[in-house]
Length: 192
View 1 (cartoon, helix red, strand yellow):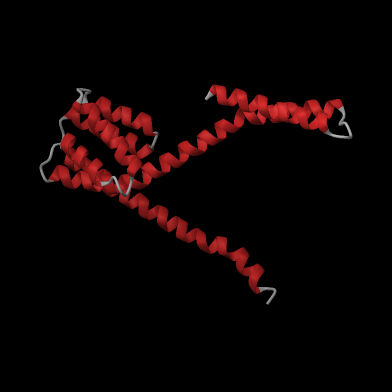
View 2 (cartoon, helix red, strand yellow):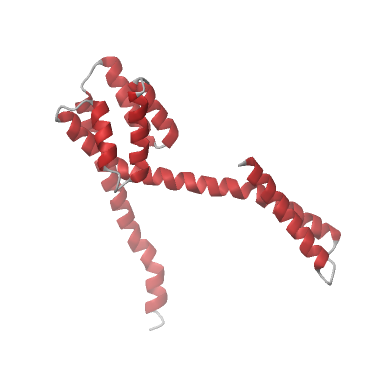
C-alpha cells in the first residue's frame, strides 16, 4: 500500500515534469514546481480515497445483509440450535444473497471452532467489519454470556430494532425522491 502511494506520487510528479519539458513553449519554473508538487500530493492521497471508498462499499454490503441474517439467526436459536451451529448454518444459507457477510460469519464460526471464546470471536468480527450493527450484536453476545440471559430474546429484540431502522431508512429515501424530482420536472415541464 505504501509502495503504491509512493510510486503513484513519483509517477505523477515525473509525468508533469516530462510534459513540461516536452512542450514547445516552456512554462514558468514556479508553475512547473507547483503542478509537480500538486500532482505528487494527489498521488499520495488518491490511494487513501480509493481505499476509503472500498471500505465504505464493503460496510454497506455487510450492513444490507445483516437484518436478514439476524432474522435467520433468531429463528435458528429459537428452534433450539446453539449459537455456534446456527452461525455456521446461516453463513451457508446467505452465501448467495450476501457473500461478504457470509464470509465474515464463516470466519467467526471457524474462529469459535478453533477455540477462540465466543465473545472474543464476535469482538473480532466487529473490528473487521466496522459496522455499527455488528458492534451492537457483539456487545449483546458478550453481555448474554456474562449475565447468563437468554440470547434468543436479546437477538429477537435486536432483530426487531434493525427491521424498524431498515423501514425508516426506506421511508426516508422515499421522502427524498419528491425533493430530488422537483428540479428535473421544472426544467422539463417549464419549456413545454
